[in-house]
Length: 115
Image (cartoon, rainbow, N blue to C red):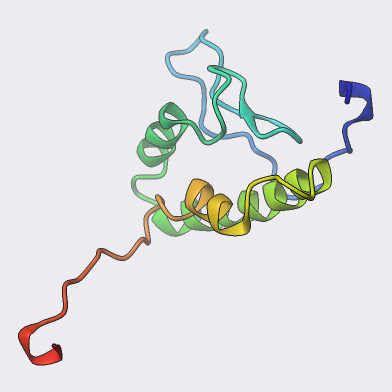
């Protein structure tokens, strides 16, 4: 498949975060519809993008959760259209896009009363 044959991304949330840091370096933004990082070539959001997003949205965790959820939806659509048979599962994409974000629940061990 060549670049010219890739599906056109939908008009969902625009992946314009995180901002480039330090300025002048390639930003860690996704290349759609492949969802790989422009800066390092790893699956987006890469570790650098996650760190920069957490810093950028430190005072706005709800906005980060909404942003990541919208991008998860868009990535699921794009990646399924690219490779519907052996692409990432929705569970893998959820872990990649949303689960690391600000509202993940900690693992809680059951109390002695619950056992």
